[in-house]
Length: 87
Image (tube, rainbow, N blue to C red; front, side, top):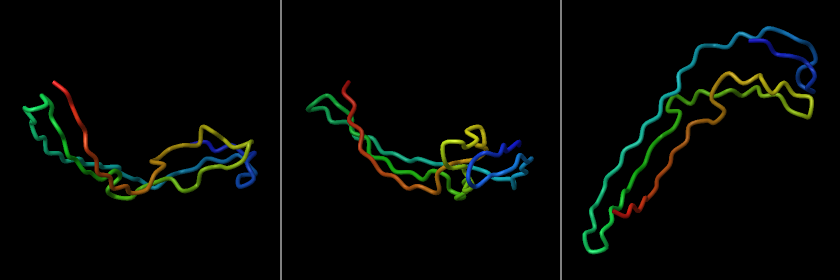
């Protein structure tokens, strides 16, 4: 992948080779039907980027190479939520 210079942390143009990576996410949920209010309520949780692969060498500053993005930008993330769905 080409990485062009200009940012404070990248002064010269170069070809960058990344280590292989995989991104895997999962989500589970449980839905409860509430007939009294004609709705469903879903409880869910999940994990994004289970293997914790992410790109840590992003360019910074106004002269950064905005095309130098090759991998996940966020580390492993856990989440939970509730969703209300009317019928």
